Image 1 (cartoon, rainbow over the protein chains, first blue to last red):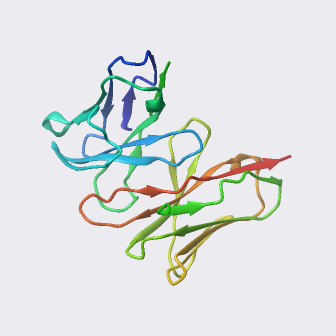
Image 2 (image 1 turned 135 degrees about the vertical axis):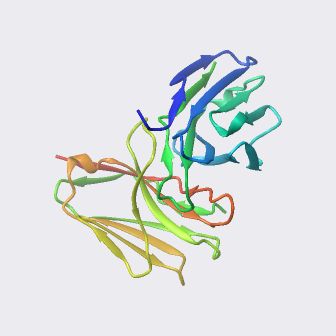
Image 3 (image 1 turned 120 degrees about the vertical axis):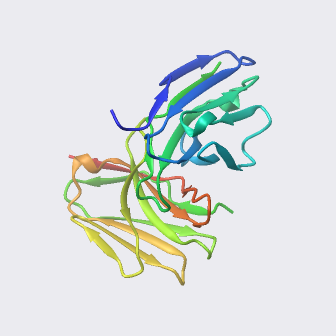
Length: 114
Length: 111
């Protein structure tokens, strides 16, 4: 499978727990993005990596959120001390060029905080 | 004000109908424009780009009016399989090239 892979697909956690999601982009894509989508809304940009460098972070990415992309390959998104408002679909996308062409989304990780 | 605004719908139309979605964007520096389709609980997928000259892909026609900062999508001869959420997307270009999504418009095509 040469698409963008995200794990886990679903995560249910208790409020206050830490969670970590993983994204494996398409191997030749140097650009990697994280988005968050809540019910009834479009995806919202969280952060962007070019290779291993995190070049932009949205103000939505509070200090409880951290993302890494070691060695410019897979990426992880960690949420510490989860809150019910963190419940959302977390989407990862990778791209090799500018524009929406070549921009491939993963199937997402659906987080439910209870 | 949201950067990209859409009517959330739902639009309930019979099979075979023609339906039009509209979208406005607030940043005149926006460079590229797209429509994405998202099925329930799935990831968004690129449907088509939008150009000022207008572009057509089968039953789908997209149009951009830069002066009015307005984007449209027309679907002719609606099929049941067209039922989905249609997301209007803009980018500002630059190093990040992040996608800015509207809230999406829900289309339900009825038999």
